[in-house]
Length: 453
Image (cartoon, rainbow, N blue to C red; front, side):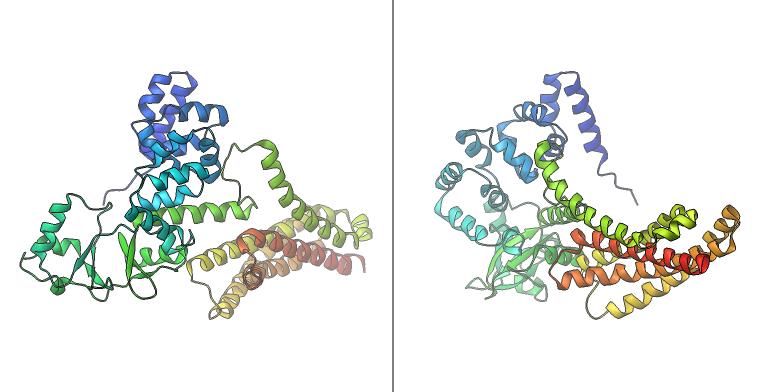
């Protein structure tokens, strides 16, 4: 099997672009930027600060600007749209596929969107309005309403002649979809079978009637899961009356997966709104200040708990030195479980039916790890401080916190989801608070009991 290396070309192109831009060889920048796909151009633009980004954007061919705009994060896209006049924007977006145009048109100035809609024929306007009527994170919002359909009462030869008459088919080429006289979805016509079977074969004989369609209100995350589980290149979209209204293709699903992955990573740091690495400093500072403030409250809570054991720390200085070890180990154990839980929730693997099993599993993992690492850490402490009681204290506290961290990693995201709070945003803060409090209090409490009583 040949190993795929999908990122090499992109990295090579972007490296060449960066070097040419650094040396101010704008002719080379122009040649490279207009010889690579729009998605790669978008990636390069997002890696540049404002002034350089604008300079490179002006070198992009007008025919490619629409494709680039569709691939950009919203913040970066908005900044470039502001620099373009109405005529430029209309020209750049005129030839986009309807699903891409639907994604972009909501971000365009009203004057531009009105002109763009007026430049379309009535059929295209109706299809665009149909897509815009759906939530962008639903199957209806993802679909392209331009779809090639066939009837079940014709032969393969008729369909082939029809495709030849059309002269083209929507890309990427997937299976065709069969409909009844009133547009009701009947099933898939596998393109491979269509191209290889006898031309006189009726379409109904090669129709896969069991192939499901996607309901227009299905969330985008579920659409991505359906594509993954069924290895689809394209899929039909139907309304609540089973009328075929469009199709979703794998390129749209890849965008959904990428955006979900980026959103998850950003949310875990409280930066779900920061799509531009070079956003204005004051704007970014404001966003991050909110998250820092929330974390400050949790740290103060932990400090308040430590304050109850101030006298113990004064009498046994080693308690203050070793305190962070227990909290950190519990935090890491909890983070491992939390990450698995958030991923499981996102992929549909975690539900009310298996929470008890997950709790039991993570409890046992916590117990095993607590025994192993409590023994190791106790040995280190005894060798370091020559104090067996101190070794026992840290072993007991570590055991408690590793188990607490593992259980909290399961319970915290479940509770947050029931409270309609995104676990990816708040889970880390809540978990850290739990493991810090349990770690500090258990360690200092055991220390006070065994070392000072």
